[in-house]
Length: 87
Image (cartoon, rainbow, N blue to C red; front, side, top):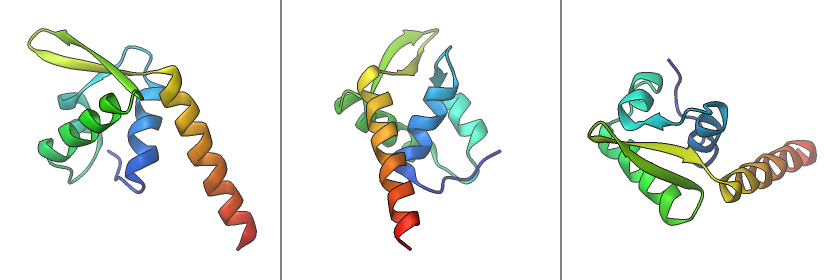
């Protein structure tokens, strides 16, 4: 189990690491103390911003990272590294 440290990067990283995509149920099993509502809101935001895509599978949506999501993740991680180097 993982704990969410940075909402913006953690969901993108999780989708990036899973080529088969993930459902909200699978994400709920990975992240400690994160409600289904929070997970669904984060996934909805990623999809609306074009960083994730979804397909319905057996009554639940499965999410994958998009090229835009990969670029966003890379940008956020570079920004984080730059901030750490300045400190």
